[in-house]
View 1 (cartoon, one colour):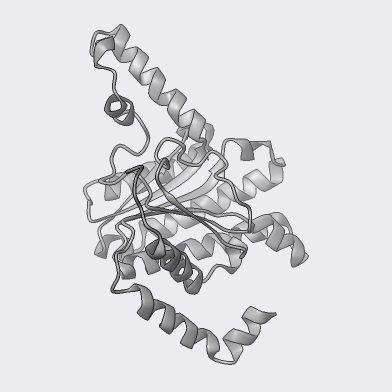
View 2 (cartoon, rainbow, N blue to C red; view 1 turned 180 degrees about the horizontal axis):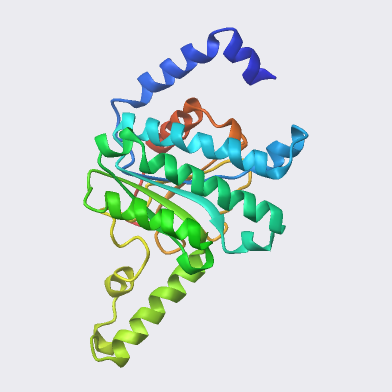
Length: 260
């Protein structure tokens, strides 16, 4: 109700302008990661089936990307669907995959992606996704693979522990084949085998989670060691530009020491 009043009284626009003024000339995070949480609860509170919450939330990813591009944030990673989410109902999973296909088709045909040179990449176990969705990811990755100005990572069929397991499997395979010797196993060698190795900065400066939950739920476990965390009460389908600005303002107010 308060958000509705703010919007319709014109205060929202002023507040957004004021927040942007506060953050735009201060250091920006180069990598923002967002856990898109609260879709189902938003749908429930609006007497809608859960997939309508996912559909509304998927629309907000475009807003988020647009704002990141405007602010000069180079890398955006969104947590859309975890390994554990496969335990949900068959209907809900089917609807989520259908929505993902539609949105990837929009990305493929988006002028914004090509004008801003955004490289799009799937983070997760590709083989667990429907074949039709895999083809969409293959297409968008191929079309954008030469871009290096901006990065959009979509974590689907993703788990932080799973990512580390997959990296260890690659490491063991290289050991068996004599590509790598045990004495040369380092953090850097593990990082080379993570899903995020293609990024100029694989470590999120800022991780945002919506819906009020205060946990990472396995998101980027290796990469988030020194990430600043910001938990917002808003459900993901209700996320607005001011919520991103507030999170960035919180990030800018913190003193990042990296253990020093």
